[in-house]
Length: 388
Image 1 (spheres, rainbow, N blue to C red):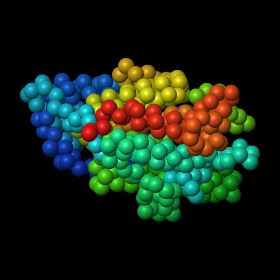
Image 2 (image 1 turned 135 degrees about the horizontal axis):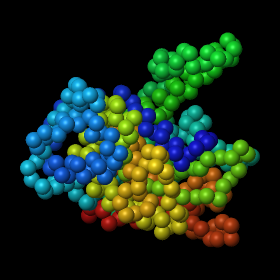
Image 3 (image 1 turned 120 degrees about the vertical axis):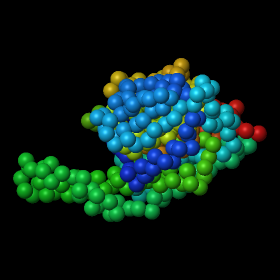
Image 4 (image 1 turned 45 degrees about the vertical axis):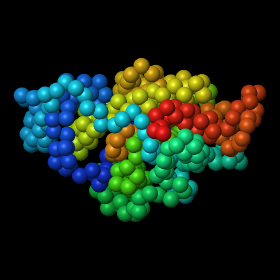
């Protein structure tokens, strides 16, 4: 199990160059659809509060040009603003087609993903099992409310057709030859071989898998809204003791970091997400789900520091903006859920109980299945947005 899970989303921000070709011409359809005021508000409050992107921008008369470098060389795209101050919403505040993306692959891949842990002879915990259980329950609930619901996966097979060995050459190129020079020769060779293996695996289960799911959503499912289902965890101590802390966080897309914006593909995705105007829907839906989940779980919000890569946005204390690959690469509104800490004592006990109807005793308190609590709360948060 990973050692720093509340911030493990950093792993999910790995950019795959195969996921998005730098085709700025795809943004031509947004010419004169947004005012300069709205553009600057979304940029400064949601997508780049640090102001890092402005180093690559030059504003002209009713237009803005984005460049590849801070020196303003290699113009990538010029956006012409609308003369109207009126906002043109890209998405109505009602949805019919909802995609559920249960996080991680699981099964034989769970240990590789570092989404597996086991205490003694207890039942192993795989995050993919948890999220898929919730996804199946939630699908039934949303369909009963009239939604069309699609799962990006319904088993423990990767969505990508690639495998770790397909990335070995890339992993070797990305693992510096001199990284282990201070080691004795045998230790150096062993350490580098292990580093290459880990990098190839990460390119498979992070970059390639996330990109494949994004392609499925963008090219085939084409939902009105995507909900990414995850379950969080907190850093272990040296004895891997269960903890008392337990929190909830909901992410919308935004808060691109200066280090990320050095990449032109990241700049393109920022422009794409800003111009498609998915943020108002994301924010409204995220706040509704967060409120329903907070009421159901009684969890406090996650707290992030100024250098965490996440920024609180809006009035709901549980909703943060973050530049995650899962919501960056997917078109349209995406809400990313991270309730519970799997290694919290009570949560762990509830996971060990599995799914069940009614209630069971947990530390002297009758509680419903944690899977149903999760699914019921999300369904409640979404119910008012489902088109009849």
